[in-house]
Image (cartoon, rainbow, N blue to C red; front, side, top):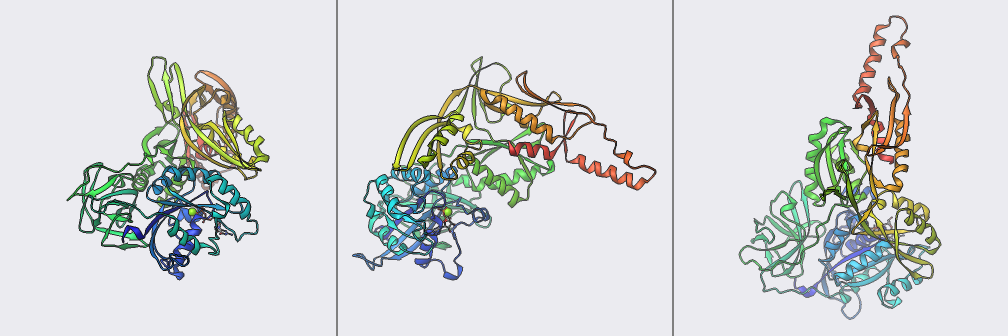
Length: 601
Ligand code: GDP
Ligand code: MG
Protein backbone atom coordinates (compact mmCIF):
# COMPACT_ATOMS: atom_id res chain seq x y z
CA UNK A 1 0.00 0.00 0.00
CA UNK A 2 1.21 3.51 -0.85
CA UNK A 3 1.89 5.48 2.36
CA UNK A 4 -0.50 8.20 1.17
CA UNK A 5 -3.47 5.92 1.77
CA UNK A 6 -2.41 4.85 5.25
CA UNK A 7 -3.55 6.33 8.55
CA UNK A 8 -2.01 4.99 11.76
CA UNK A 9 -3.90 5.92 14.89
CA UNK A 10 -4.62 4.80 18.41
CA UNK A 11 -7.47 5.28 20.79
CA UNK A 12 -6.52 6.74 24.14
CA UNK A 13 -8.78 7.31 27.13
CA UNK A 14 -9.26 6.87 30.81
CA UNK A 15 -10.10 3.31 31.82
CA UNK A 16 -13.71 2.32 31.06
CA UNK A 17 -14.39 5.29 28.81
CA UNK A 18 -15.05 2.84 25.99
CA UNK A 19 -11.91 2.30 23.88
CA UNK A 20 -12.39 -1.41 23.35
CA UNK A 21 -16.08 -1.02 22.59
CA UNK A 22 -15.37 1.69 20.04
CA UNK A 23 -12.72 -0.57 18.53
CA UNK A 24 -15.40 -3.29 18.23
CA UNK A 25 -17.64 -0.99 16.18
CA UNK A 26 -14.74 -0.10 13.92
CA UNK A 27 -13.96 -3.79 13.34
CA UNK A 28 -17.58 -4.30 12.43
CA UNK A 29 -18.09 -1.22 10.24
CA UNK A 30 -14.93 -1.85 8.25
CA UNK A 31 -16.01 -5.44 7.74
CA UNK A 32 -12.85 -7.10 9.08
CA UNK A 33 -14.78 -9.13 11.64
CA UNK A 34 -17.66 -11.25 10.44
CA UNK A 35 -20.87 -10.21 12.26
CA UNK A 36 -21.41 -13.80 13.38
CA UNK A 37 -17.98 -13.86 15.06
CA UNK A 38 -18.43 -10.50 16.75
CA UNK A 39 -18.36 -10.38 20.53
CA UNK A 40 -17.84 -7.54 22.98
CA UNK A 41 -14.28 -6.28 23.50
CA UNK A 42 -13.16 -8.46 20.62
CA UNK A 43 -9.51 -7.51 20.95
CA UNK A 44 -9.21 -8.42 24.63
CA UNK A 45 -7.96 -11.94 24.00
CA UNK A 46 -6.65 -13.09 27.34
CA UNK A 47 -9.12 -14.74 29.73
CA UNK A 48 -8.06 -12.39 32.45
CA UNK A 49 -8.71 -9.37 30.21
CA UNK A 50 -12.18 -10.64 29.42
CA UNK A 51 -13.11 -11.39 33.00
CA UNK A 52 -11.86 -8.15 34.44
CA UNK A 53 -13.07 -6.16 31.45
CA UNK A 54 -9.72 -4.44 31.04
CA UNK A 55 -7.16 -4.34 28.27
CA UNK A 56 -3.65 -5.39 29.22
CA UNK A 57 -1.94 -5.91 25.90
CA UNK A 58 -2.07 -3.44 23.04
CA UNK A 59 -3.45 -4.77 19.76
CA UNK A 60 -2.86 -3.52 16.25
CA UNK A 61 -5.50 -4.06 13.60
CA UNK A 62 -5.47 -3.26 9.90
CA UNK A 63 -8.83 -2.19 8.45
CA UNK A 64 -9.77 -0.99 4.98
CA UNK A 65 -12.02 2.08 4.99
CA UNK A 66 -13.75 3.78 2.09
CA UNK A 67 -14.62 7.36 2.99
CA UNK A 68 -18.42 7.74 3.08
CA UNK A 69 -19.08 11.48 2.97
CA UNK A 70 -17.60 14.86 2.14
CA UNK A 71 -15.03 15.88 -0.45
CA UNK A 72 -13.05 12.68 -0.09
CA UNK A 73 -16.03 10.33 -0.49
CA UNK A 74 -14.95 7.13 -2.20
CA UNK A 75 -11.30 7.46 -1.11
CA UNK A 76 -9.99 4.01 -0.15
CA UNK A 77 -7.79 4.21 2.93
CA UNK A 78 -6.01 1.61 5.02
CA UNK A 79 -6.35 2.25 8.73
CA UNK A 80 -4.08 0.75 11.35
CA UNK A 81 -5.72 1.02 14.72
CA UNK A 82 -3.91 0.30 17.96
CA UNK A 83 -6.05 -0.36 21.01
CA UNK A 84 -4.25 0.53 24.21
CA UNK A 85 -4.56 -0.39 27.88
CA UNK A 86 -5.70 2.46 30.09
CA UNK A 87 -4.35 1.52 33.51
CA UNK A 88 -1.44 3.42 35.06
CA UNK A 89 0.68 0.29 35.39
CA UNK A 90 0.70 -0.09 31.63
CA UNK A 91 1.58 3.44 30.61
CA UNK A 92 4.78 2.14 29.04
CA UNK A 93 2.64 -0.04 26.79
CA UNK A 94 0.61 2.99 25.74
CA UNK A 95 3.68 5.07 24.99
CA UNK A 96 5.06 2.34 22.72
CA UNK A 97 1.84 2.24 20.76
CA UNK A 98 1.83 6.01 20.42
CA UNK A 99 5.24 6.02 18.81
CA UNK A 100 3.84 3.86 15.99
CA UNK A 101 1.05 6.33 15.14
CA UNK A 102 0.50 9.74 13.55
CA UNK A 103 -2.76 10.42 15.33
CA UNK A 104 -4.84 9.63 18.38
CA UNK A 105 -8.53 9.56 19.10
CA UNK A 106 -8.90 11.02 22.58
CA UNK A 107 -12.03 9.42 23.94
CA UNK A 108 -13.97 10.89 26.86
CA UNK A 109 -17.04 9.37 28.48
CA UNK A 110 -19.78 11.99 28.00
CA UNK A 111 -21.32 11.08 31.36
CA UNK A 112 -18.01 11.34 33.28
CA UNK A 113 -15.85 14.01 31.71
CA UNK A 114 -12.09 14.27 31.86
CA UNK A 115 -10.30 11.93 34.25
CA UNK A 116 -6.72 11.51 35.42
CA UNK A 117 -5.68 9.14 32.64
CA UNK A 118 -7.36 11.30 30.03
CA UNK A 119 -4.75 13.90 30.93
CA UNK A 120 -1.85 11.47 31.29
CA UNK A 121 -2.55 9.91 27.89
CA UNK A 122 -3.13 13.25 26.21
CA UNK A 123 0.26 14.49 27.42
CA UNK A 124 1.92 11.31 26.14
CA UNK A 125 0.26 11.80 22.76
CA UNK A 126 1.34 15.45 22.58
CA UNK A 127 4.92 14.48 23.46
CA UNK A 128 4.80 12.16 20.45
CA UNK A 129 3.50 14.99 18.21
CA UNK A 130 0.28 13.16 17.41
CA UNK A 131 -2.73 14.81 15.83
CA UNK A 132 -5.51 14.61 18.41
CA UNK A 133 -9.17 14.10 17.49
CA UNK A 134 -11.29 14.80 20.58
CA UNK A 135 -14.33 12.53 20.84
CA UNK A 136 -17.14 12.32 23.37
CA UNK A 137 -18.35 8.75 23.77
CA UNK A 138 -21.46 7.10 25.26
CA UNK A 139 -23.79 9.86 24.04
CA UNK A 140 -26.58 7.24 24.14
CA UNK A 141 -26.52 7.36 27.95
CA UNK A 142 -29.33 9.39 29.54
CA UNK A 143 -26.76 10.90 31.92
CA UNK A 144 -24.53 12.09 29.07
CA UNK A 145 -23.74 15.81 29.08
CA UNK A 146 -21.95 16.28 25.77
CA UNK A 147 -22.33 20.10 25.80
CA UNK A 148 -20.73 20.49 29.18
CA UNK A 149 -17.86 18.11 28.53
CA UNK A 150 -17.23 19.42 25.01
CA UNK A 151 -16.45 22.76 26.68
CA UNK A 152 -14.10 21.06 29.15
CA UNK A 153 -12.34 19.06 26.45
CA UNK A 154 -12.05 22.01 24.05
CA UNK A 155 -10.60 24.13 26.85
CA UNK A 156 -8.06 21.40 27.62
CA UNK A 157 -6.71 20.87 24.12
CA UNK A 158 -7.31 24.34 22.75
CA UNK A 159 -9.96 23.81 20.10
CA UNK A 160 -13.62 24.77 19.65
CA UNK A 161 -16.35 22.75 21.40
CA UNK A 162 -17.83 21.99 17.95
CA UNK A 163 -14.58 20.22 17.01
CA UNK A 164 -15.33 17.50 19.57
CA UNK A 165 -17.06 14.62 17.78
CA UNK A 166 -19.86 12.73 19.46
CA UNK A 167 -20.22 8.98 19.22
CA UNK A 168 -21.64 5.94 20.90
CA UNK A 169 -19.40 2.92 20.73
CA UNK A 170 -22.36 0.91 21.95
CA UNK A 171 -24.93 1.81 19.30
CA UNK A 172 -22.41 2.76 16.60
CA UNK A 173 -23.84 6.28 16.30
CA UNK A 174 -21.29 8.68 14.79
CA UNK A 175 -18.61 6.05 14.27
CA UNK A 176 -18.67 6.14 10.45
CA UNK A 177 -18.24 9.89 10.57
CA UNK A 178 -15.37 9.44 13.02
CA UNK A 179 -13.59 7.06 10.61
CA UNK A 180 -14.05 9.63 7.81
CA UNK A 181 -12.53 12.29 10.08
CA UNK A 182 -9.56 10.04 10.88
CA UNK A 183 -8.79 9.94 7.15
CA UNK A 184 -9.43 13.67 6.70
CA UNK A 185 -7.63 15.08 9.76
CA UNK A 186 -4.73 12.74 10.33
CA UNK A 187 -1.62 12.86 8.17
CA UNK A 188 -0.36 9.82 6.29
CA UNK A 189 3.00 8.39 7.39
CA UNK A 190 6.14 9.84 5.83
CA UNK A 191 9.30 7.83 5.17
CA UNK A 192 11.99 7.15 2.61
CA UNK A 193 10.95 4.17 0.49
CA UNK A 194 14.34 3.98 -1.23
CA UNK A 195 16.40 4.00 1.97
CA UNK A 196 17.65 0.85 3.77
CA UNK A 197 14.76 -0.68 5.70
CA UNK A 198 14.11 0.44 9.25
CA UNK A 199 11.18 -0.79 11.31
CA UNK A 200 10.36 -0.12 14.94
CA UNK A 201 9.44 -3.03 17.20
CA UNK A 202 6.49 -1.83 19.29
CA UNK A 203 5.42 -5.15 20.76
CA UNK A 204 6.71 -8.66 21.01
CA UNK A 205 4.69 -11.60 22.28
CA UNK A 206 5.33 -15.27 22.74
CA UNK A 207 2.93 -17.75 21.19
CA UNK A 208 3.21 -21.42 22.10
CA UNK A 209 2.67 -22.57 18.53
CA UNK A 210 4.40 -19.89 16.50
CA UNK A 211 7.19 -18.71 18.77
CA UNK A 212 7.83 -15.00 19.15
CA UNK A 213 5.57 -12.71 17.13
CA UNK A 214 7.19 -9.31 16.62
CA UNK A 215 4.93 -6.35 15.85
CA UNK A 216 6.56 -3.65 13.77
CA UNK A 217 5.87 -0.35 12.16
CA UNK A 218 7.98 0.28 9.06
CA UNK A 219 9.58 3.73 8.95
CA UNK A 220 11.80 3.50 5.83
CA UNK A 221 12.31 1.00 3.03
CA UNK A 222 10.58 -2.31 2.58
CA UNK A 223 10.67 -5.77 4.19
CA UNK A 224 9.52 -8.83 2.26
CA UNK A 225 8.97 -12.45 3.18
CA UNK A 226 12.19 -13.49 1.43
CA UNK A 227 14.43 -11.14 3.40
CA UNK A 228 16.74 -11.98 6.25
CA UNK A 229 16.28 -9.45 8.98
CA UNK A 230 18.84 -8.01 11.37
CA UNK A 231 18.22 -6.68 14.88
CA UNK A 232 20.17 -3.45 15.14
CA UNK A 233 20.90 -3.60 18.89
CA UNK A 234 22.50 -7.06 18.83
CA UNK A 235 23.37 -7.61 15.16
CA UNK A 236 21.54 -10.96 15.31
CA UNK A 237 20.30 -12.13 11.91
CA UNK A 238 17.11 -14.17 11.48
CA UNK A 239 15.34 -15.91 8.60
CA UNK A 240 11.75 -14.76 8.20
CA UNK A 241 9.26 -17.58 8.47
CA UNK A 242 6.32 -15.27 7.94
CA UNK A 243 5.44 -11.63 7.48
CA UNK A 244 1.88 -10.42 7.74
CA UNK A 245 -0.77 -8.07 9.08
CA UNK A 246 -3.42 -8.52 11.80
CA UNK A 247 -6.85 -7.92 10.45
CA UNK A 248 -7.52 -8.80 13.27
CA UNK A 249 -6.66 -12.43 12.55
CA UNK A 250 -3.09 -12.86 11.29
CA UNK A 251 -2.86 -12.79 7.49
CA UNK A 252 0.29 -13.48 5.49
CA UNK A 253 1.39 -10.54 3.38
CA UNK A 254 4.10 -10.41 0.69
CA UNK A 255 5.82 -7.43 2.30
CA UNK A 256 5.50 -4.25 4.33
CA UNK A 257 6.52 -0.77 3.15
CA UNK A 258 6.74 2.77 4.54
CA UNK A 259 4.17 3.45 7.26
CA UNK A 260 2.78 -0.08 7.32
CA UNK A 261 2.10 -1.95 10.53
CA UNK A 262 2.33 -5.74 10.73
CA UNK A 263 4.12 -8.68 12.28
CA UNK A 264 7.18 -10.84 11.73
CA UNK A 265 7.78 -14.44 12.76
CA UNK A 266 11.34 -15.71 12.87
CA UNK A 267 11.16 -18.90 14.91
CA UNK A 268 12.94 -17.20 17.82
CA UNK A 269 11.70 -18.55 21.14
CA UNK A 270 12.45 -15.69 23.52
CA UNK A 271 10.97 -12.20 23.39
CA UNK A 272 14.26 -10.83 24.68
CA UNK A 273 15.79 -11.58 21.26
CA UNK A 274 13.18 -9.36 19.71
CA UNK A 275 13.20 -6.45 22.08
CA UNK A 276 10.55 -3.82 22.12
CA UNK A 277 12.10 -0.53 21.00
CA UNK A 278 14.76 -2.21 18.86
CA UNK A 279 15.09 -1.39 15.15
CA UNK A 280 14.75 -4.12 12.52
CA UNK A 281 16.72 -3.74 9.31
CA UNK A 282 17.73 -6.05 6.44
CA UNK A 283 20.88 -8.15 6.50
CA UNK A 284 21.49 -7.60 2.78
CA UNK A 285 21.40 -3.80 3.04
CA UNK A 286 21.47 -2.74 6.68
CA UNK A 287 20.65 0.75 7.86
CA UNK A 288 23.43 2.53 9.73
CA UNK A 289 21.42 4.43 12.30
CA UNK A 290 18.86 2.87 14.62
CA UNK A 291 15.57 4.61 15.39
CA UNK A 292 15.20 6.17 18.82
CA UNK A 293 14.12 3.42 21.18
CA UNK A 294 11.86 3.42 24.20
CA UNK A 295 12.74 3.68 27.82
CA UNK A 296 12.84 0.27 29.45
CA UNK A 297 10.06 -0.16 31.98
CA UNK A 298 11.50 -0.29 35.48
CA UNK A 299 10.00 -2.49 38.16
CA UNK A 300 8.59 -0.28 40.92
CA UNK A 301 7.02 -2.76 43.29
CA UNK A 302 8.55 -5.93 44.69
CA UNK A 303 6.96 -8.90 46.36
CA UNK A 304 8.05 -12.42 47.27
CA UNK A 305 6.05 -15.21 45.62
CA UNK A 306 6.13 -18.60 47.33
CA UNK A 307 4.37 -21.84 46.46
CA UNK A 308 1.98 -22.99 49.20
CA UNK A 309 3.30 -26.44 48.60
CA UNK A 310 7.10 -26.29 48.68
CA UNK A 311 7.41 -29.09 46.14
CA UNK A 312 5.84 -26.79 43.52
CA UNK A 313 8.97 -24.63 43.47
CA UNK A 314 10.31 -26.02 40.14
CA UNK A 315 6.88 -25.48 38.57
CA UNK A 316 6.85 -21.90 39.80
CA UNK A 317 10.25 -21.28 38.22
CA UNK A 318 9.09 -22.74 34.93
CA UNK A 319 5.87 -20.72 34.99
CA UNK A 320 7.78 -17.47 35.62
CA UNK A 321 10.18 -18.29 32.78
CA UNK A 322 7.19 -18.75 30.48
CA UNK A 323 5.45 -15.54 31.53
CA UNK A 324 8.70 -13.64 31.11
CA UNK A 325 8.72 -14.70 27.46
CA UNK A 326 5.64 -12.57 27.04
CA UNK A 327 6.27 -9.81 29.50
CA UNK A 328 9.74 -8.34 29.45
CA UNK A 329 8.82 -6.03 32.33
CA UNK A 330 8.57 -8.92 34.79
CA UNK A 331 11.77 -9.54 36.75
CA UNK A 332 12.46 -12.21 39.36
CA UNK A 333 15.22 -13.96 41.23
CA UNK A 334 15.24 -16.86 43.68
CA UNK A 335 15.03 -16.06 47.36
CA UNK A 336 14.53 -18.06 50.51
CA UNK A 337 12.51 -17.17 53.53
CA UNK A 338 12.86 -18.88 56.89
CA UNK A 339 9.09 -18.75 57.22
CA UNK A 340 7.94 -19.45 53.67
CA UNK A 341 10.69 -21.61 52.21
CA UNK A 342 11.90 -21.30 48.61
CA UNK A 343 10.37 -18.71 46.34
CA UNK A 344 11.12 -15.75 44.11
CA UNK A 345 11.49 -12.04 44.68
CA UNK A 346 9.57 -10.52 41.76
CA UNK A 347 9.54 -6.97 40.45
CA UNK A 348 6.42 -5.43 38.93
CA UNK A 349 5.39 -2.19 37.27
CA UNK A 350 2.69 -1.66 39.86
CA UNK A 351 0.08 -3.36 42.00
CA UNK A 352 -2.27 -4.31 39.17
CA UNK A 353 0.67 -5.86 37.34
CA UNK A 354 1.48 -7.88 40.48
CA UNK A 355 -2.12 -9.00 40.83
CA UNK A 356 -2.32 -10.01 37.19
CA UNK A 357 0.92 -12.00 37.25
CA UNK A 358 -0.13 -13.77 40.44
CA UNK A 359 -3.51 -14.57 38.98
CA UNK A 360 -2.00 -15.87 35.74
CA UNK A 361 0.43 -18.08 37.65
CA UNK A 362 -2.43 -19.54 39.63
CA UNK A 363 -4.83 -19.88 36.77
CA UNK A 364 -2.70 -20.77 33.77
CA UNK A 365 -0.17 -22.87 35.66
CA UNK A 366 -2.33 -24.30 38.45
CA UNK A 367 -0.12 -22.97 41.25
CA UNK A 368 -1.21 -21.95 44.76
CA UNK A 369 0.85 -19.02 45.93
CA UNK A 370 1.53 -16.75 48.89
CA UNK A 371 2.62 -13.22 48.06
CA UNK A 372 4.43 -11.18 50.71
CA UNK A 373 3.35 -7.59 51.30
CA UNK A 374 4.58 -5.49 48.37
CA UNK A 375 7.33 -2.95 48.90
CA UNK A 376 9.17 -0.36 46.81
CA UNK A 377 12.95 -0.13 46.29
CA UNK A 378 14.92 1.64 49.01
CA UNK A 379 18.51 2.87 48.87
CA UNK A 380 20.25 2.56 52.19
CA UNK A 381 23.58 4.23 52.89
CA UNK A 382 25.45 2.72 55.82
CA UNK A 383 27.70 4.65 58.20
CA UNK A 384 30.78 3.45 56.35
CA UNK A 385 29.49 4.94 53.10
CA UNK A 386 28.24 1.78 51.43
CA UNK A 387 25.07 2.06 49.36
CA UNK A 388 22.72 -0.91 49.42
CA UNK A 389 19.72 -1.32 47.12
CA UNK A 390 16.98 -2.99 49.14
CA UNK A 391 14.20 -4.76 47.27
CA UNK A 392 13.37 -6.98 50.23
CA UNK A 393 13.12 -5.72 53.82
CA UNK A 394 15.27 -8.66 54.92
CA UNK A 395 18.21 -7.14 53.02
CA UNK A 396 18.05 -4.04 55.19
CA UNK A 397 21.45 -3.71 56.87
CA UNK A 398 21.63 -4.56 60.56
CA UNK A 399 24.44 -2.12 61.32
CA UNK A 400 24.32 1.67 61.61
CA UNK A 401 22.44 3.41 58.83
CA UNK A 402 23.39 6.92 57.68
CA UNK A 403 20.39 7.56 55.43
CA UNK A 404 17.59 5.86 53.56
CA UNK A 405 15.97 7.13 50.38
CA UNK A 406 12.66 6.11 48.89
CA UNK A 407 11.10 6.55 45.44
CA UNK A 408 8.72 9.46 44.94
CA UNK A 409 5.87 9.80 42.46
CA UNK A 410 4.18 12.76 40.82
CA UNK A 411 0.50 12.21 41.45
CA UNK A 412 -2.48 13.75 39.68
CA UNK A 413 -5.93 13.47 41.21
CA UNK A 414 -9.04 14.70 39.42
CA UNK A 415 -12.29 15.09 41.31
CA UNK A 416 -15.38 17.23 41.79
CA UNK A 417 -14.38 20.16 44.00
CA UNK A 418 -16.62 18.99 46.89
CA UNK A 419 -13.97 16.40 47.65
CA UNK A 420 -10.89 18.60 47.68
CA UNK A 421 -10.77 18.62 51.49
CA UNK A 422 -11.01 14.86 51.78
CA UNK A 423 -8.32 14.33 49.15
CA UNK A 424 -5.93 16.79 50.77
CA UNK A 425 -6.40 15.10 54.11
CA UNK A 426 -5.59 11.70 52.62
CA UNK A 427 -2.53 12.98 50.76
CA UNK A 428 -1.23 14.75 53.85
CA UNK A 429 -1.62 11.61 55.95
CA UNK A 430 0.54 9.88 53.34
CA UNK A 431 3.30 12.49 53.54
CA UNK A 432 2.21 14.18 50.32
CA UNK A 433 3.38 17.66 49.31
CA UNK A 434 0.93 19.75 47.30
CA UNK A 435 2.46 20.96 44.02
CA UNK A 436 -0.47 22.73 42.46
CA UNK A 437 -4.19 22.88 41.91
CA UNK A 438 -6.20 23.80 38.82
CA UNK A 439 -9.87 24.12 38.00
CA UNK A 440 -10.70 22.28 34.76
CA UNK A 441 -14.22 23.68 34.95
CA UNK A 442 -16.34 25.34 37.61
CA UNK A 443 -16.71 22.14 39.61
CA UNK A 444 -13.81 19.95 38.58
CA UNK A 445 -10.38 20.18 40.16
CA UNK A 446 -6.97 18.80 39.33
CA UNK A 447 -4.66 18.35 42.33
CA UNK A 448 -0.98 17.68 41.87
CA UNK A 449 1.05 16.09 44.65
CA UNK A 450 4.46 14.62 45.28
CA UNK A 451 3.95 11.43 47.28
CA UNK A 452 6.25 8.61 48.37
CA UNK A 453 5.54 5.69 46.06
CA UNK A 454 5.50 3.33 49.04
CA UNK A 455 2.48 5.24 50.39
CA UNK A 456 0.62 4.96 47.09
CA UNK A 457 0.97 1.22 46.73
CA UNK A 458 -0.40 0.77 50.22
CA UNK A 459 -4.18 0.92 49.55
CA UNK A 460 -4.07 4.60 48.50
CA UNK A 461 -6.38 4.11 45.55
CA UNK A 462 -9.00 2.27 47.64
CA UNK A 463 -8.90 5.05 50.23
CA UNK A 464 -9.20 7.71 47.56
CA UNK A 465 -12.18 5.97 46.02
CA UNK A 466 -13.98 5.50 49.30
CA UNK A 467 -13.37 9.08 50.47
CA UNK A 468 -14.70 10.51 47.21
CA UNK A 469 -17.57 8.07 46.65
CA UNK A 470 -15.69 6.76 43.63
CA UNK A 471 -15.56 10.14 41.87
CA UNK A 472 -11.81 10.74 42.03
CA UNK A 473 -9.39 9.38 39.49
CA UNK A 474 -5.69 8.92 39.96
CA UNK A 475 -2.58 8.87 37.85
CA UNK A 476 1.05 8.79 38.94
CA UNK A 477 4.49 8.54 37.51
CA UNK A 478 7.83 7.94 39.19
CA UNK A 479 9.73 11.12 39.87
CA UNK A 480 13.06 10.51 41.55
CA UNK A 481 13.88 9.81 45.16
CA UNK A 482 14.00 11.53 48.52
CA UNK A 483 15.71 10.89 51.80
CA UNK A 484 13.18 9.99 54.48
CA UNK A 485 12.98 8.91 58.09
CA UNK A 486 12.43 5.23 57.46
CA UNK A 487 12.94 2.28 59.76
CA UNK A 488 12.66 -1.46 59.48
CA UNK A 489 10.12 -3.09 61.76
CA UNK A 490 10.61 -6.78 62.54
CA UNK A 491 7.94 -9.09 63.87
CA UNK A 492 9.22 -11.73 66.28
CA UNK A 493 7.59 -14.94 67.47
CA UNK A 494 9.19 -16.12 70.70
CA UNK A 495 12.17 -13.97 69.89
CA UNK A 496 12.56 -15.34 66.33
CA UNK A 497 12.08 -12.77 63.56
CA UNK A 498 9.59 -13.83 60.89
CA UNK A 499 11.22 -12.47 57.73
CA UNK A 500 8.00 -12.43 55.70
CA UNK A 501 6.47 -9.86 58.08
CA UNK A 502 9.36 -7.40 58.20
CA UNK A 503 8.51 -4.04 56.67
CA UNK A 504 10.22 -0.75 55.96
CA UNK A 505 7.95 2.06 57.11
CA UNK A 506 8.11 5.71 58.03
CA UNK A 507 9.18 6.32 61.61
CA UNK A 508 5.81 7.86 62.49
CA UNK A 509 3.98 4.76 61.30
CA UNK A 510 6.22 2.11 62.82
CA UNK A 511 4.16 1.88 65.99
CA UNK A 512 0.85 1.52 64.13
CA UNK A 513 2.32 -1.18 61.92
CA UNK A 514 3.75 -3.03 64.93
CA UNK A 515 0.51 -2.93 66.88
CA UNK A 516 -1.61 -3.99 63.94
CA UNK A 517 0.63 -6.94 63.01
CA UNK A 518 1.06 -8.26 66.56
CA UNK A 519 -2.64 -8.09 67.32
CA UNK A 520 -3.52 -9.65 63.99
CA UNK A 521 -1.11 -12.53 64.55
CA UNK A 522 -2.32 -12.99 68.09
CA UNK A 523 -5.73 -13.81 66.67
CA UNK A 524 -4.44 -15.93 63.81
CA UNK A 525 -1.93 -18.20 65.54
CA UNK A 526 -3.47 -20.99 67.61
CA UNK A 527 -2.36 -21.58 71.16
CA UNK A 528 0.66 -23.80 71.63
CA UNK A 529 1.90 -25.99 74.46
CA UNK A 530 3.82 -23.00 75.79
CA UNK A 531 3.37 -19.27 75.95
CA UNK A 532 4.36 -17.42 72.77
CA UNK A 533 5.25 -13.74 72.89
CA UNK A 534 4.68 -11.79 69.64
CA UNK A 535 6.76 -8.66 69.41
CA UNK A 536 7.33 -5.84 66.97
CA UNK A 537 10.79 -4.34 67.14
CA UNK A 538 13.00 -1.74 65.53
CA UNK A 539 16.46 -3.24 65.86
CA UNK A 540 16.55 -4.40 69.49
CA UNK A 541 13.88 -1.94 70.67
CA UNK A 542 10.50 -3.60 71.19
CA UNK A 543 7.63 -1.27 70.20
CA UNK A 544 4.60 -3.59 70.57
CA UNK A 545 3.85 -6.89 72.22
CA UNK A 546 1.09 -9.48 72.51
CA UNK A 547 1.00 -12.91 74.11
CA UNK A 548 -0.53 -16.18 73.04
CA UNK A 549 -1.32 -18.08 76.21
CA UNK A 550 -0.27 -21.70 76.56
CA UNK A 551 -2.73 -24.55 76.58
CA UNK A 552 -2.36 -28.21 77.12
CA UNK A 553 -4.39 -29.66 74.32
CA UNK A 554 -5.05 -33.28 75.17
CA UNK A 555 -7.23 -34.38 72.31
CA UNK A 556 -6.94 -38.04 73.20
CA UNK A 557 -8.57 -37.41 76.54
CA UNK A 558 -11.84 -37.14 74.64
CA UNK A 559 -11.50 -40.77 73.59
CA UNK A 560 -12.50 -42.34 76.82
CA UNK A 561 -12.17 -46.06 76.87
CA UNK A 562 -10.36 -48.14 74.33
CA UNK A 563 -11.79 -47.18 70.95
CA UNK A 564 -8.46 -47.60 69.20
CA UNK A 565 -9.61 -46.89 65.62
CA UNK A 566 -11.13 -43.64 66.67
CA UNK A 567 -7.92 -42.68 68.44
CA UNK A 568 -5.89 -43.46 65.34
CA UNK A 569 -8.19 -41.39 63.17
CA UNK A 570 -7.78 -38.43 65.45
CA UNK A 571 -4.02 -38.76 65.42
CA UNK A 572 -4.01 -38.93 61.64
CA UNK A 573 -6.15 -35.87 61.40
CA UNK A 574 -3.75 -34.03 63.60
CA UNK A 575 -0.85 -35.09 61.40
CA UNK A 576 -2.72 -33.91 58.30
CA UNK A 577 -3.12 -30.53 59.97
CA UNK A 578 0.58 -30.38 60.84
CA UNK A 579 1.59 -30.66 57.21
CA UNK A 580 0.13 -27.26 56.55
CA UNK A 581 2.02 -25.85 59.52
CA UNK A 582 5.25 -23.90 59.19
CA UNK A 583 7.73 -23.92 62.03
CA UNK A 584 9.08 -20.61 63.23
CA UNK A 585 11.58 -21.65 65.85
CA UNK A 586 9.46 -23.89 68.07
CA UNK A 587 6.20 -22.24 67.13
CA UNK A 588 3.80 -23.92 64.75
CA UNK A 589 2.12 -21.41 62.48
CA UNK A 590 -0.66 -22.54 60.18
CA UNK A 591 -0.18 -21.53 56.58
CA UNK A 592 -3.53 -19.76 56.70
CA UNK A 593 -2.18 -17.40 59.35
CA UNK A 594 0.56 -16.27 56.99
CA UNK A 595 -1.85 -15.81 54.15
CA UNK A 596 -4.36 -13.92 56.27
CA UNK A 597 -1.72 -11.70 57.87
CA UNK A 598 -0.11 -10.88 54.53
CA UNK A 599 -3.25 -10.31 52.53
CA UNK A 600 -4.94 -7.87 54.86
CA UNK A 601 -1.87 -5.87 55.83
P1 GDP B 1 -12.10 0.64 27.90
O1 GDP B 1 -11.61 0.34 29.28
O2 GDP B 1 -11.85 2.08 27.56
O3 GDP B 1 -11.59 -0.29 26.84
O4 GDP B 1 -13.70 0.52 27.95
P2 GDP B 1 -14.67 -0.63 27.43
O5 GDP B 1 -14.83 -0.58 25.96
O6 GDP B 1 -14.24 -1.93 28.02
O7 GDP B 1 -16.05 -0.13 28.05
C1 GDP B 1 -16.27 0.06 29.42
C2 GDP B 1 -17.75 -0.06 29.74
O8 GDP B 1 -18.51 0.98 29.11
C3 GDP B 1 -18.36 -1.38 29.23
O9 GDP B 1 -19.28 -1.81 30.18
C4 GDP B 1 -19.06 -0.96 27.94
O10 GDP B 1 -20.16 -1.79 27.65
C5 GDP B 1 -19.52 0.45 28.26
N1 GDP B 1 -19.60 1.28 27.06
C6 GDP B 1 -18.63 1.49 26.15
N2 GDP B 1 -19.05 2.34 25.18
C7 GDP B 1 -20.33 2.66 25.48
C8 GDP B 1 -21.31 3.51 24.85
O11 GDP B 1 -21.10 4.14 23.82
N3 GDP B 1 -22.53 3.61 25.48
C9 GDP B 1 -22.80 2.95 26.63
N4 GDP B 1 -24.01 3.11 27.16
N5 GDP B 1 -21.91 2.15 27.24
C10 GDP B 1 -20.69 1.99 26.68
MG1 MG C 1 -10.24 -1.81 26.86
